Image 1 (cartoon, helix red, strand yellow):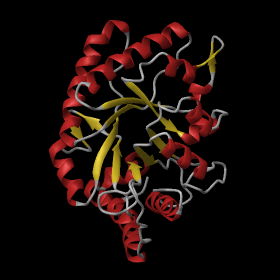
Image 2 (cartoon, rainbow, N blue to C red):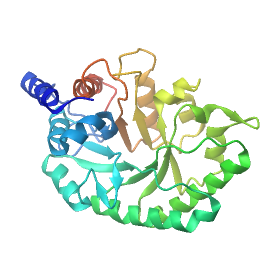
Image 3 (spheres, helix red, strand yellow):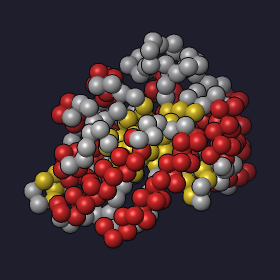
Image 4 (cartoon, rainbow, N blue to C red):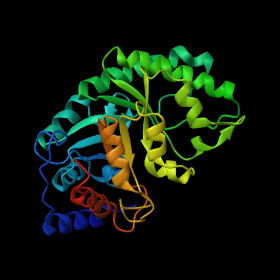
Length: 288
């Protein structure tokens, strides 16, 4: 974990080095004229523990326009009230459009308690102004019957959130591309959730690690992936394993609403890796 002294030293070097200019593109650019490139704040999980506001300021200075949070508890987001968090990032020229929310452990018997938790989470995130609330994963399930219980649960959450004009989604890893009772878990989930209530935030890297191509899934289910996680082995574009051009082009064709860079492993200090990922996408002519 980066200590505060190293964190601040790295931060100063980045800010002193200057940032790449932003390209003006048509309908998909953010309100401030920058490309609509978002960041999942889990990418800077250690830095966010050291200095929340300082880290967010650096994210804004890099050029990111939208945020997806990964920290919620006791009614607070990164230790701040929803109203205070919203104001802080608005003052920096950003907005939070999505949040990853683990929620309580779930069984059929705890359904009502779990839904109460999601009701409170919805209230808090409405105050921030999110468009999307995303479940970032679930336990390993051994049967399709068990999986169907969770699909029904997701439909219930989606029914709750859509009534407030917030979409509920599920974020994949690689294990959803394994088979249970002869069925690919991801496909079963897509087929057993209501498209009016549940979307899927496709993590393009984990699809690849699961043995499939993101574009193939986008073509197979064109209306289910309005939000993407843009990820690579480390920094975006670093591995050469993903065809980001075809991913973006297909996503735009299908009506992409939001996307978030997520960097989980790094060749550099995480702040540097996150900036390099932004620079790669900002320079890419296929990113709007």
